[in-house]
Amino acid sequence: MEMIRNRREPTMTKPVRSASIWKRLLKTYELYLFLLPTLVYFLIFHYGPLYGLQIAFKNFIAVKGIWGSPWVGLEHFERFFHSPQFTLVLKNTILLNLYELAVTFPIPIIMALLLNQIQNVRFKKWIQTITYAPHFISAVVIVGMLFAFLSPRSGLLNELIRLFGGEPVYFMARPEWFKTIFVFSGLWQNAGWSMVIYLAALTGVSPELHEAAIMDGANKYQRIWHIDLPSILPTVMILFILNIGSFMSVGFEKVYLMQNALNLDASEVIQTYVYKSGLLNAQYSYSAAVGLFNAVINFILLVSFNELAKRSKQTSLW
Image 1: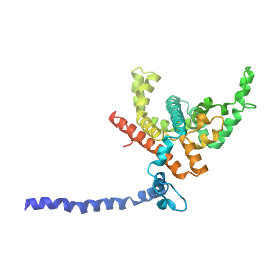
Image 2: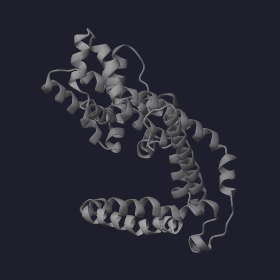
Image 3: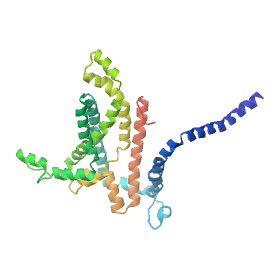
Image 4: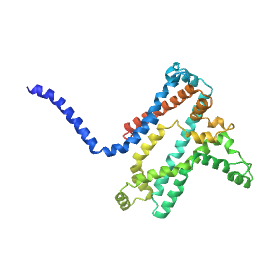
């Protein structure tokens, strides 16, 4: 009889557990209602379009639709890997992202650590406003400003070059200047936004830690290194993993607007190549294959660095 009771006990707890879950859901249903629009948004605009990824393995014909188009397997991927543009777009994408990650990721951290040491609240808010304001400028306006400031005829930088006896340089048409202009203009635009995130993390640092460090004779640099930086390290790791997860995705709008026939050797990246192949040349299946390749690389990088963070006992996404 005891064995029969022990066998029946798990089956009796399942309805109780499910009932308790439903009770908890009903008690906090308002929170789930707030969450519902976000879930619907992701289902429609992020997971729904995954249905169309199959055209990367088909010869998509619009009149036949996705289901009616014939399968071609990995033909479009092989075409991309053997195309003359493969090496160029892959090299430009990787180099541009490495350059951007090396410059734009650590500088906001340094800015936040330094700004956190300022005692004058009014001056601190003034610096935050100045550095944060460019974030609201659109990519179109940013590129227009770049063309105006770097113009070989009337640009401010070339006027300074002439003032010191130099020859004007057409920066926007020189391939060797494209990556530097792209990265540092992006730093000017987005450093303030990233800095605010780290400043918010620094507000969680207990003042008692700094008081104890001061009593022990620690100076500002030692307190930054041993208190502030370790305190925001989990935030740094999360943002670093998220940046790695979008490593192969360069800002398409800005790259495309800065691109011209003279700097194409340095500015042609995977995103612009997909746009030209898919929308301008109507090679929908081919462009879908290239975009899928790019997304798979991002996914592999995200999972790999997240696993690396877990093994090194750092904060990870999951």
